[in-house]
Image (tube, rainbow, N blue to C red; front, side, top):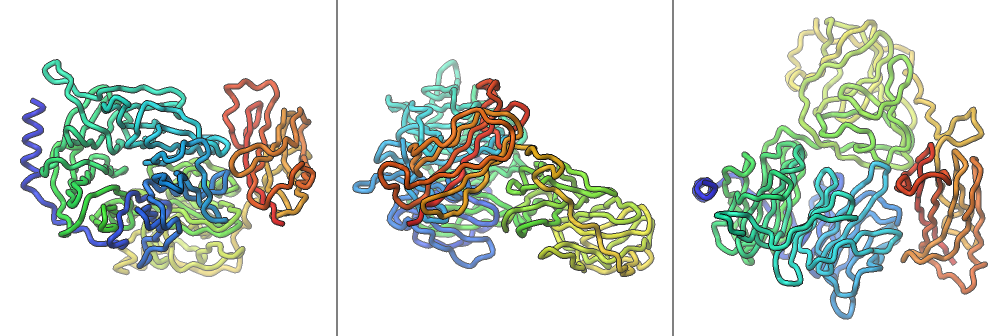
Length: 633
């Protein structure tokens, strides 16, 4: 029965071509092995040409260096505790045997301590723990590694890993080739500590094990963690699907062109029934799409001359955009209409007024604005913090520096916001709305001007822009109606729109959300501060804060993770602490460069199970943080 269904599906997609057209997106003539989005920028790793970056609004790519390296994987991410914001895996080649690099504000740094020379790193991925810790994993010809204190440690050495990915719930999936030249896959649900694996990966038919083939790519259903798709190579060259977490598999797609490896799968996270599958046939490529979870497929026509598909990335602007990395013909972009939209939000250092402009998959403040150093404060007569953000509300967030956030979700073209008599912080929808086109319930409510916050002062806004929050004072309780169509047509009746009457009164000031309780001489959370001066020579001061009696260790490391000195290792009372380090006192002169300092602290009676590196932990939990310092001579 499965075979008949599969043949039926094959007949459908074989004769059905999509009218969508992929167009060139630059890096012509280059072999692009890996592409990855971070915020509004696409990063690309190439063979022998290095790493590139391009914002979606740019007209060309910017080279980031590593021109002579064979880049297999590129992983952009928020600045981690090592100072890196991009980590890449390369094919180690003689005489340069390096296989992982990290990019910081000081340039590229070899970051492969612990990985054997000449190993090929085919994938680098990372996860953020609930405590805010960033954990990075690497996989390739020498197995799977996990980075700790700048040193990579082997967590799976079953064979040559050809594919690794991490599901939305944090499960690590790997697939590859055992030392006996047989396919296998494995998965870990505890950050690589333990693994469930299967050798001779197969599906069962007539009580016989038929090999799935070597796993080359993964795609994960965003709502059901048991549904996983894998693209394979020899011997079947198929796409497989499991609905029970990998215990059994069904084939859902075969390439019409024979021996073509399914090197890349990309799923729509908002409509997981939509999946793209790209093949690497050497000097040619095929691209398939399903919109019914693999029951039927159609082939998307590619421009003439496009070579093998090596990677794909999907994002949203006002439409769905699929970016395709190819073997020697650069990057292509495929655009489709979509109900999902992506909106770029720029924030300044200090306080910002922000809002949620679309229906996100995750409304947590920490997921959407991870670098904010304050709670998200909304207003209802007084300021109150909220961890889960809501559409229609405005929020205050504080940042230590300028930043950008890309908010992706289902488009909102019409919404109604509740308001009270007096001052209100309101949110936005997915498209700009001119304030003069805002309607109200009851009709004709009287309001002040609308205010937002820029450069530490209030400014009047004539348009409600996506992602921004606004103050408005109303004469009564009711509802404000934001409608994209009303802005575009200007056909609303003047009897239903609000009546804006300017007022000399200004909105409330930003909230007083200091890190500490000003009435207390005891900190309210664990904090490790940036050392000063920085850079320094030879003395630096390191300050930290303990909200409770804690066993404290403070150590200095080289950028390669080698310990230099232990400055503190004792139980200390709660309070504000300061340690002075004289680098010249170390026997043997320390060279100029980047160093790391690491603080661990917590209740001396806390159990080992509690010591998970929780940033800002309190009430008996364990705290760990790492920052960098620079010796400049």
